[in-house]
Image 1 (cartoon, rainbow, N blue to C red):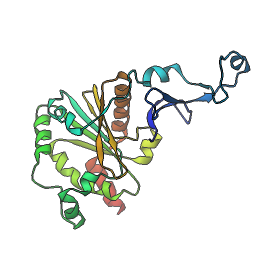
Image 2 (image 1 turned 90 degrees about the vertical axis):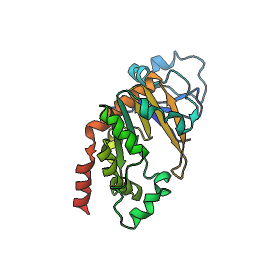
Image 3 (image 1 turned 120 degrees about the vertical axis):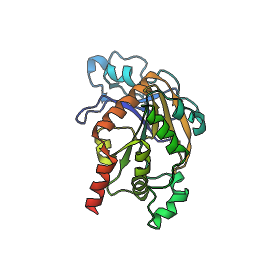
Image 4 (image 1 turned 180 degrees about the vertical axis):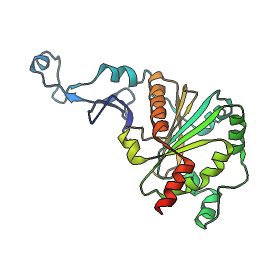
Length: 246
């Protein structure tokens, strides 16, 4: 299992960070090693394999989940939320490609040079149009490599259709996301309350979602959303930048 970044109070290269690991009963803590002899001599029952690190109290109170990790669910288990959310449905897309795109009907047409941004509305875009007409918001930030991968170029090409339906899609370079310490996993966040984090296999196929309302997990997602949204570039502006560099 790849370490999952939970949160950090790190600034300017400082190191306090929390990660989720394979054992759901444990959290991996990164911090400065304790070297004070007066403290070390007072530690109890120390095993040869143990070390000790210092981390800010705020790191633990803000980012340690209060519950065990949720079970993996089919994506269909959250389909109702896309119609029932009250205010905002927000997505972070971090992967370099998605199997659903490559296996979809528009992929080959796009490779052949067709304009795939003006396809007739489908059920997804119709729902976006209906919800945004009610004053609700569908928002998304996509991470883009430099140079962009083929999968990311496809998403840029198809974005205008979603934007026309009412979705606000913005883009952020991966280098900027790493500098801002954003998560490296995809998720949906509904009404700043319900978090659905994706699980993918090595072929970019979505295996399902982990759904939680754990306050620490939701807070971390809200902070990631606010940071990403502040720095991301709207789709039309981003597309212009891409064309100017080609």
